[in-house]
Image 1: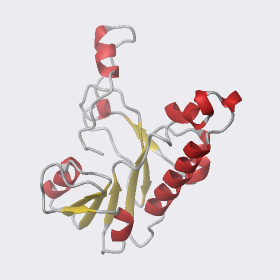
Image 2 (image 1 turned 135 degrees about the vertical axis):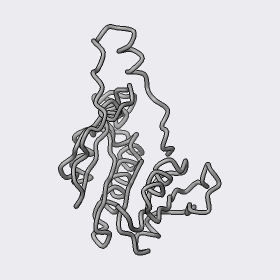
Image 3 (image 1 turned 90 degrees about the horizontal axis):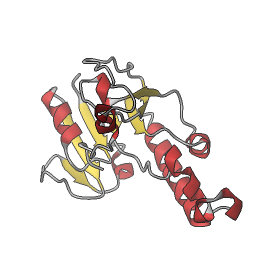
Length: 187
């Protein structure tokens, strides 16, 4: 693949550099400066740069903590549904879902991939998320569990390239695979 690629919500440069290594004119964009000091990084709001002539939009890390299934309880006061909704958290959910939709629906960018977590039902409804392919790092030779969703628009599904056999539950190796992995691609 070649062409102009915008890697949104990334400051580490890991994904940008991977696209560059494939011959793409790749740029990252985040509200924070690039960790690697690259001049191929746009510091600012990615929504202001969607019309800059991209062939592919890779959204590496939209605001997932409010969208993810594991965070659903925090939508309620004290983490308990019986206590009622936390208005600030629901407002944050609305903003995150609107951001997700704006990136996904940037139809003038022919190909789009939006990474997303395993979402709770409210997030799925608000983002209007389409079909998602879920993958783990161990599909690609990395010994970790991290169920990651990809909403792929005009892109083929990922094909495992170096599938590892997951260790048996209860083993030390399974525990090692299960620890949260520091995000190599940055947020």
